[in-house]
Amino acid sequence: MKFSVATYNIHKGFSHLTRRMVIHELKEKLHGLSADVLFLQEVLGMHQRHAGRYHDWPGKPQHEFIADTMWHEVAYGRNAVYRNGHHGNAVLSRYPIVAQENADISAHAFESRGLLHCQVNLGKGAPILHCLNVHLGLFERGRQWQIRALVDRINETVPHDEPMIIAGDFNDWRRKGDRTLQEELDVVEVFEAVKGRPARTFPSVMPVFRLDRIYARGLAVVDARVHYAFPSGRMSDHAALAATFEVVQKRP
Figure 1 (cartoon, rainbow, N blue to C red):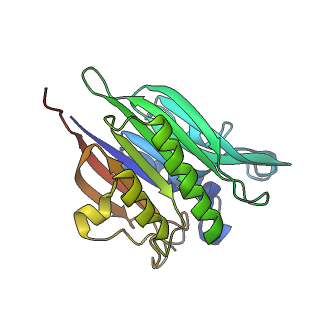
Figure 2: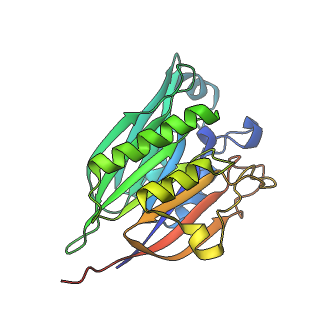
């Protein structure tokens, strides 16, 4: 069987440089991707000040607003909590999410980060799919610690014979974490597998840095795409990534 995924840092529903509220446009564009499983970062679960300021602010958390009738299964991991609300990572799925856990991987008290681990049931005869949604820190030392926490968690909780996808905003512009993940977890980065190197995704206006990634293990990569078509400067400061996979059938 084949299925598709996408990952996108939605910048809390605001445009590049936080000039405009664009959550309604984002929802439309994300629905256009038609991914079976969607990994989102910087998702506002609640923000009272924005709700009072914008007359068309959604009356529900952003992940639920985006999911609507497209994705019936939603998991949200709250990472940063402040006076007016909170934000974190979310996984939206057309398939049942049978288990979820949000792990705190904050390396500093002033930079809250999390790792949302969901187990997805792809259907009869298919193995459980492990989906790990991450948003790593801005500082190199902290990222190295977070990568180690990610590796340790996977080694402890994800059976090697069950397929896995790790996706999100890695902020790993020097690719140090990339080497660690591939060497220690036996994963492939999908754009490297298809196109020879990870995609440039930041800033969306003129992408230079390869910050966003999709890694896979136990799956065949069918294709990988960067969605620069999201209007530059009108949406998030990141580009969206998408990939299609095929479940590898194990021989009896």
